[in-house]
Length: 497
Ligand code: NAP
Image (cartoon, rainbow, N blue to C red; front, side):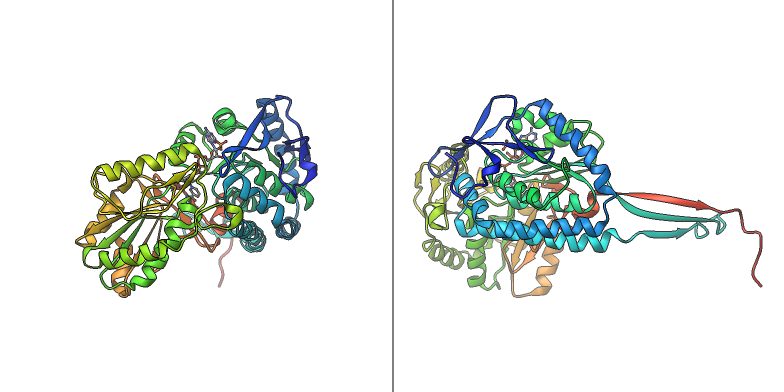
């Protein structure tokens, strides 16, 4: 059942172990969870269903190890991250192989995900050295009524134990984007991998193990979110939750979590506004790349095209021509469109397509599905009464809404509860800036599809798309708190002059 090239240390028979106290262990539960291969719809791997006692153990060990790690010199913490980055990149093949098998990511994209994660760790180590070495010095006399007899020194200190929960679509990269900032800032990490993506995450965690991080500082507990999620997120030993996933899950977690900092990266319905003066070739290329990469299963995928009516026919024609060239098939063959993550997801996508067709939208390609593999479709003449106008399909289907005015496009973008990213295509930078200003989304790209990277750029969702701002620098800062020491001196007893 286990794939080729796996790290043998993390396997027990055909079940992957969980990681605690610097060791790979079998759960006492005696229960396992199947990880499906989305392409074959058959079980591919098995992981442990960890118990609440095992979660407690992970958190207790993390607490103890974190106290020492917080006192470990910053340069040593940075060195450990650099070591891990190098090992992760060396081991890209087995990790990417798991991504192909458990989240049906095309092999070339799976390799990119692992390499990017290694690069993210190296950058995090460098950035941590810069920003964590700085503090602030204040004196008291600027504030009315004060003498110059108090000095305040403030610096950044870690939060404690960070719970990291990534989603299935970038299980390695989105775990590492939480773990790197947490660790450089002196925190411990408890990782709860997504079930689909768990084995890729466990392989990735093994690269931290090989890099020699202290025992207990990092742990990885596997189990269905629905089973151990609440226990983890409501656990009094957790000092911060960094979560990436669907809005529903994220909002439920934020309602239950205690008084701790939350970093929430949730869903998106990224709008792409195309003006009459746009370079339509450039726009069409970006719509294909943005809308259909990894079969549309990206939070920053283009999820609705809002095209000015006068250029819509021309644009649609160009998009259709490019869409016809996409290869459709299995991730092992590096196809552009690969099976979506699950049957539930494929059924959901099918429901959106049928709803749009039933309400009068025009499908430029025929509906075709084999198992979880869905052929890409451009759905034209979409109107606001169709579900696809508002919902996040997370699949290779893309709605086009024809607009008469730019204001109509901006209104559609702002009326959605999702507000992660958006993009504008125009040759007029003046217009682009004005429209960007009016679009209420976390990031607006001008003349490019939405995207997360480079990973040090700020990345945030407004409204239901998230809480806080990510990106390497923002994540490091978010995973720290400010500590001040105030030195009090006797009031001035002398004057100059
Ligand atoms: P999901 O179903 O919400 O799951 C996300 C993670 O939460 C998984 O690890 C899941 O574990 C866990 N989980 C489920 N229930 C939980 C609970 N009650 N308590 C704690 N954890 C729980 O999302 P997904 O389907 O994996 O990911 C797709 C979604 O993520 C999309 O909406 C996408 O837009 C969003 N996303 C956002 C960003 C961003 O940066 N804004 C990036 C990528 C993806 P199990 O797998 O074990 O259930």
